[in-house]
Length: 441
Image (cartoon, rainbow, N blue to C red; front, top):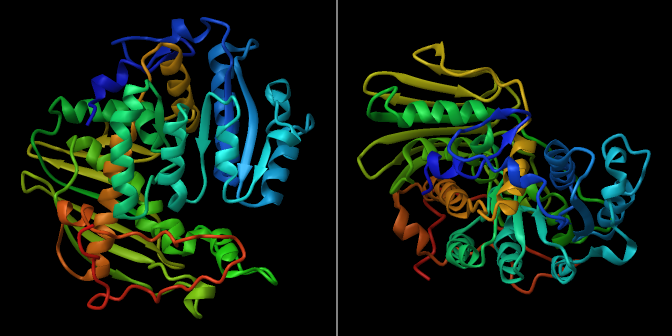
């Protein structure tokens, strides 16, 4: 896993404040006349947000002489692709109007259908934003790497062992092609997190003995089936609530906190055990209500025997807790995004006022491409994604699972011969004692 110093070699100096003094690539930001042409695959809220973020990033790099253009959009659903194109090309839009001259999307570069991503990759885009439901991520990553495109991909990058193995197989290929792959684990681009990780890695809390992380909150959203909507269409529409599209909330959401602990340790766990269930989710048959859980508690074990305790839930009651804690032999580090970066209860870094991490990750991506030193975060994000998958499956099975055994399994949630408008059965909610990890692939 790349360490902090490797990462800092390709981060930029922004607004006169150097994130690191190892190597600034800001000098490259305005170099050359090549325009980076961007295509969006997945036109939901996160995808459209990422478009706004990369446009804002380019504004901070090149000011009134931007060299980033949005030239194509793609989505499974025609109305979403067309609405995205309409919104982006509206000069009166509050969010995108200021960047109107950089929007080059046309009806000919607005694609829909399950093969929309393939159509977009055949255009002359240089960089793609992958923001579809996570179940599609391995397939889209593979296609983008094979097409030789730079990539910003949302987390997680897989929902099962088969998808994770595909992502691992793309690491060397993408590096040999000189492709940048930056993931939506934005804390790795957030100055306070970077600073406190430096302190941890430099021994500020001594030898790491244990860790804890949490994403305890409420359900993000639920979409009801629209009249006449077929099973497969509905499951993509309401993707957060089905395993093949989402991977469960420990994978889709809690991966952020898990990634912070893996970052602190520069490693991934080797074993997991845990429990959880579905207590407050929507009642009704799985085809209508989904079948993911609403709470997990996992104990992860790392190579040196160190334990990390992971908690996540979506309950309509109780307070929120989205935080991480690393316990060392001489101190304790505590992080809570946007509000606390502490060692032994005292502020350890500057506050978090500044460039949004969602923008900073695109600044770092663009600068790395232009510097000829492309950031490639695929291993980090795949490690953290599969850490979450390992924890989920340990809970589903009720058994202790080893990393190598779980990664080698034939687990594959993606429906075969998927088509929009088709009937698509949904398994019952996983039940410990009944759910078993599939055999080795």
